[in-house]
Image 1 (spheres, rainbow, N blue to C red):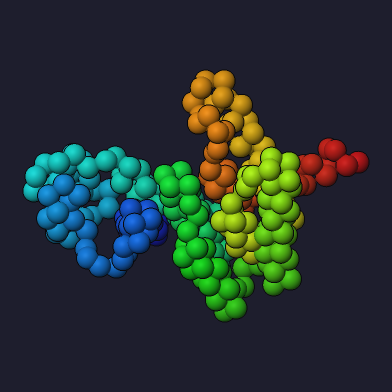
Image 2 (cartoon, one colour):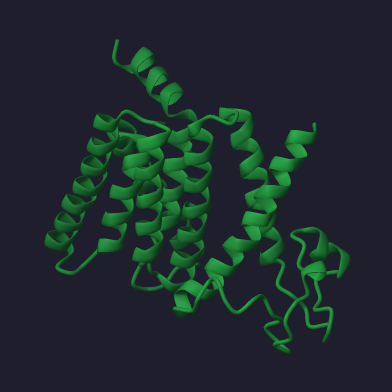
Length: 255
């Protein structure tokens, strides 16, 4: 039980850091300094009022100085990071895969939120994620190098060809290069087969959402939707259940 509480707490701390990344990276601000401050009164937040999850609940979602309401998004991100870290511990114990896919989940969450808000997938997030994956796999292998490198190729090239096809069909850019680089980097973590099927799932989810959103008039007239969130969900589905999904498909549809 103690180790689970520790894992949950560490995840919440990283969730606080993810909040900083989500808020500052699109504005090209440092994620290291200055320290956290109230967005309304700009007064620095003391460390004892900056305890993930607990401080938000204790202060009832308000600044300790000016009582300005703090968006609940901050609490949601901290809870997400805490629970996904604990979930990964249950899935992988403290193996190299735990560290690989926990950091991957953090990065995908940051990419998703920023893509929804700005329609951008930031190179700096992808670069840090790729460097982390490469270094970890050198010292603590979590995926065979052949599969990982082919995963990069499969993820990046398949998205690149889809982007070219979309440009030919619609006579305009229909898929950003950020999505191409995103699929390549995450392909390293999941391998070539999972990357390909996850991309197919992402487009399927995006199509379903597009149809629902159009029916409810909840989408822009140009029909643009950020693909990053759908790629993130699809890739994480295949991190956890990819082998089971492919095994089921082979067993029931290819025999």
